[in-house]
Amino acid sequence: MKKSRLGKDPLGQSPPGAVADSLDWISDSRTDEEGRVEPTRPSEDGPGKKHPKNAIILSGGGALGAFEVGVLKALINGRSPATNHTPLPIDIATGTSVGAFNAACMALYEKPVRAVENLERLWVDRIADHSGQGGNGVYRFRPPALAWKHPEHMARHPLELLTQFGEDSMFLTRDWIKRGIGMLQSGEPLEHRAMEMVDLSSFVSTEPLQRVIREAIPLERLRQSRMRVKIVTTDWESGEAAVFDQNQLNDDMGHAVILASTALPGFFPPVSIGGRTYCDGGLVMNTPTMPAIEAEADIIHMIYMDPDVGEIPLARFRNTLDTFDRMLTIQFAMNINRDIEQIGRINDGLAALDVGIAGASTSDDTQTRSFIKSAGHVIRRQAASNRPYRKLQVHRYHPTEDLSGVLGLLNFGQDRIESLIARGEQEAEGHDCEKSGCILAD
Image 1: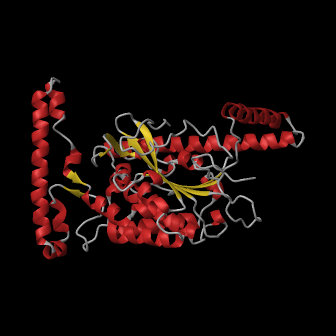
Image 2: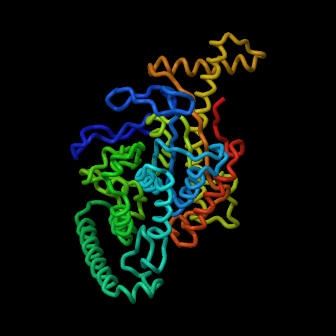
Image 3: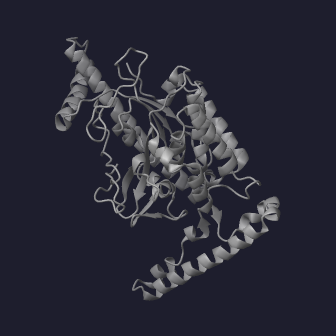
């Protein structure tokens, strides 16, 4: 993982937060941004004891974000063995792409049950493609060639369709003129200049998603939420992750940040914020674990939509889409497994130190070598950072098989959205920590 771009923020706000290069530090500090010690929350273990902080990690995946809604429903309503069938309180939410939208929505209500109910309604009523709104709530094509799929909506709103045709014609004309002038003025080879005339995102409008974000996420309420929210985007110019805290989401650019996190390059247009260009955070951090750890999470609930690579059947005949899908799944799986392995090494090192400090003896050479390796790793890192480590728990939730392939990321059909929510609930309700490779506290 790369560090986010730091420096003076063009909007006069605090710059996006830095992202550590790895999980090699896990601090036990409990301080806010100004160095003040955070007050402890009431705990069932007794007064004055720190309550473990729970974080939800929500990854990108387009329409598959409905799967996250189902997992959250089960966790928050106490229907998952991962929480011993008790409702999950949420202190921290980090999100990339569609996960950024879900994370922001989860912070809008004090009670998690109300938040997830609201999120489900948004997905079913506003995001899903149905005749009541004449399309999905994420994108539409220019010109509105698919409007015929919803004749009832066309009959009720004929002027809307005519207006869209007019606006789209003007947009595409201006876009082609600008590209044509650039082609004539460019000194690049003819083949390169011809390719600059092609941009699929010019034929895609994110106006529906902009409207949903604007109407569904009141920024003042988001900034005042007790839940810490981290939104991950990609700085398109530097290629680095840029993580925005909810306090940075002012009225001028807050909705644009959430939109930018969902802007898949090549399909959705990038978003300009303060003179810089941002796009989908999934390019560099599809499962934003580090921002949650930096926010002092103790127990992490990681929800992502990629199945185990071995569960994706090889296509009978090779094709570009299946190849691209498998390539992305392998890349995301490597990043997730790397994070999990590093957390496991930290926990092993802390356990080894506990054994050494207690004066316990190891029973064989294998345990001795493990003790030296793990404890040495922790000691070196603690000496370098001057920050004590803490143990983490990680629960992983993801589908057991491929839900869609690449094109399925853009399928927002209402029946499919409802099915994905139900699949997420089933995954969380039948969660098996051993099979899922979770990291549990000793």
